[in-house]
Amino acid sequence: MLKVENLRKNYGKFQALKDLTFSVSEGSIYGFVGPNGAGKSTTIKILATLLQPTAGEAYVAGVNVVTYPERVRELIGYMPDFFGVYDDLKVSEYLDFYAASYGIGRAKRRKICDDLLELVELSHKREAYVNSLSRGMKQRLCLARCLVHDPQVLLLDEPASGLDPRARLEMRELLKELQKMGKTILISSHILPELAEMCTEVGIIEGGRMVISGRVDTIMQQLQFSRVVKVTVLDRAEEAAALMEAMDWLGEVAVEGNVLQARLLGGPEHLRDTLRELVKKDIPVISFHENSHNLEDIFLQVTEGVEE
Ligand SMILES: Nc1ncnc2c1ncn2[C@@H]1O[C@H](COP(=O)(O)OP(=O)(O)OP(=O)(O)O)[C@@H](O)[C@H]1O
Image (cartoon, rainbow, N blue to C red; front, side, top):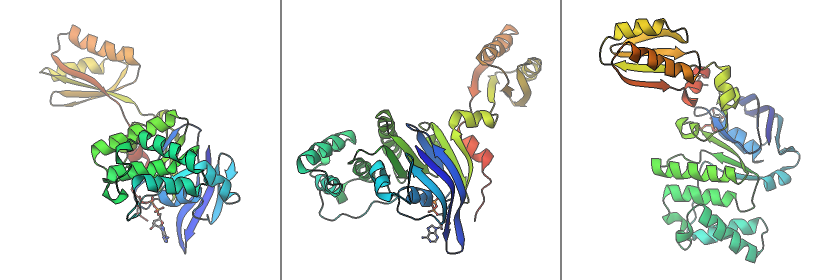
């Protein structure tokens, strides 16, 4: 649904994007992750037709963003990383204004605005002034604004920045809802845990280059992320370690006090066998679980913390 090929953007002599290439499949939530200054906003602005690339190409649903910007604008909803100031404008007027700017007729506009306010749970605020809304509400309103022309693709630049945990959760739920409605969503963030739970695909950008991009599960496999078994015993840790060392489905066992950890080389049945063997030998196991890796681990593994 989105395709970026050898995209380059220079600001004067500074190369903000260096031959960036990635794609986003239809219906996915693509987490576009990278540290501050990595080039996320620049890429999103190019996709949103607000910035001209220096070289390379970008397509939304097969439409070239440089050659056919008007057509691309119909296909996308863009949420910038800032919310403007709107003095003396009510929530309903704000949405109506944006819907009108897309040439939607008055009667249809009213229905669209009502539906969108309901979707982002702001119906009760329709007569409130935009400036009086909380940050979370403003972000939701901004998202509603992106949706007035029912675009297929959403380009969201840090939609959860500055939100408290509850507002973040609400934003996440809203994005999942939009995915269910068939939208393809690209969402940028420099905070990984924010995206980890909801993304189906992820791209990690650093210093204007894509470090890795693809389906979250494929990337995990590519990087050979193993699962780790963590066992805590009341005592007899050395004995437990010796037993675990002998299990050929476990890697090397690390012991720290009464906590033992080993890489799980097999499937879930081996997890069961590990516990069974320990209990059979009467080892006093007081906790037993599997530590799975997440996006955070991928991020740390593939990025180097380069500052440019
Ligand atoms: N208009 C501009 N003129 C000059 N340099 C710019 C301009 N806009 C961005 N840059 C530089 O380009 C690089 C990429 O910026 P960009 O805003 O795309 O990064 P980002 O990943 O979105 O970062 P953040 O998370 O901080 O928003 C940064 O080094 C930035 O300073």
